[in-house]
Length: 217
Image (tube, rainbow, N blue to C red):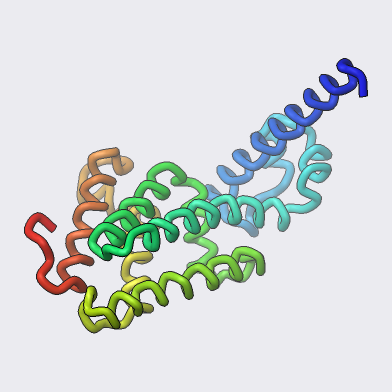
């Protein structure tokens, strides 16, 4: 391959990645605003500033594009779960896990909204790949919690319901944004709100499950 051919190939790759990124962002904005059923591919293409044919060239269908938006949110969720198992100290691990989930919501408000709305509808459009990844990850997390319980590092509680509590408590800042506005008087949560949320949820979790929780938690 000549240098010129290699450069042309690299440029095509960059162009492809750029178009995919722009279309995914536009799709996320449309799905967050109107939901899967009401969103039309022509409005996604118009928001992205590309011909509708490009959307189908890169993603083939609205269903596949929606699946890619959901998967883009599942990946950071898996990374957050890894925080739970990164330390053998449940105080450190649970604090890192809660903060990681709150950080994901803060950094990905639109994809979080799309994902949460899909779950509220029963996960009808949730791709099997996303479902399988999440189920495998939660099994690992629950096993980690059970191990700490068996060793006396955590009090006796149901690990599945602890996971549900953490998920629901952290996701509230996306699902109930309008209620947050009523309480705080702000149109959207800011950095201080997210930091306070992470600290408050962490404190509630640790005081509920860790015997002799250290002062300050």
